[in-house]
Length: 411
Image (cartoon, rainbow, N blue to C red; front, side, top):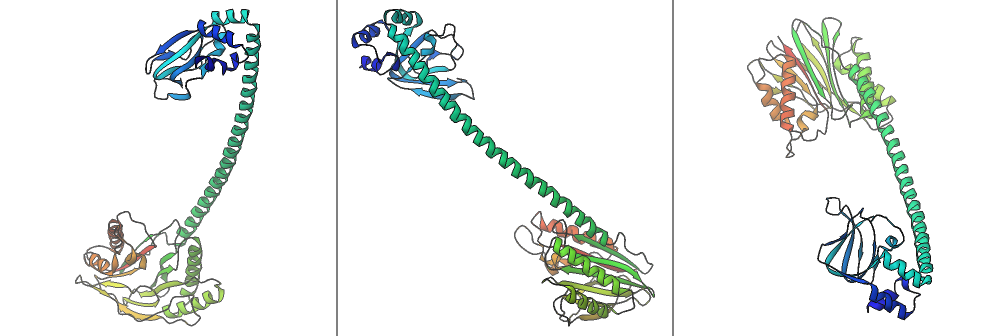
């Protein structure tokens, strides 16, 4: 059986049977216990081995965390032939027994003696090394080709990732520009008058949103108050919001009533608008002398009033239509007197629709309950407290819609 093993090794394949028998008698037998090391990586190589029983593990970084098994040699396989022709050569890996193993061992001295007596053994060695070199070259070429493919793939992926990153940065810059433009449309500060104070807050669901608000001085001791909510979110809604705001501001200062302003603006929007977007709006005119707030509501949330006695009411309302849907628009037009000590609250439906982590909406009743405890706060404090309460209720859950608040406090 051992003789058959020798005959199957290319180095000895061309030797006659009697010579193989003589070589076999000259080989030493080496026994290894389970996990016993045959030699370590870096050791000087002096012997050639043939496995006759058991298994040998060929390892890099043996015994370390990064240990890597390169090969597993079984009975009939051999290792270390380079040590026979390379004096002082070092082992390139560690070899360890897996289970009890038996090896045949040939030293360099034994090999040189064999080549003297059997010159054809040298020719076999040259042939084996040539074949190994050819195989190594082929494998190296294959490995290089494969690595080139991997590098090309990695390079292509890197280029794609870089292009995506550049595009992402470009979009982020454009979004920031859009956000800056939208912020510039909103008032930097609200009017200061003796009879009233004003407050407002806005919390977009995205970097740019579709909500709008404004509080601005008009002629004849009046103040215009505006809040709106464009359908959908993002840049298209922000653009539509800017258009609606500009149109309302353009018509508000020519002496029209709140209802007349919204009707004119609706005609402009329906004539210019070529998409399905629309905007709900509440626009009102506050007379600072009479404390009368005359407003028109185009499909927007009806406002709330905090009375001086701490009660909160929803202003009676009728149906109304958003701007931008049809040329003839139906509005809900009201006149409300704001007595000293009262707070008038306008808000978008993002406030009522905002949900907590369990999916429960904040709802109108929570707004009314929170507002009822704010009698001693000014308009801005009331808006801040309402928004803080909403954020705490939300508790980190995703915000689906923009939230905007505008408050008028009669002092």
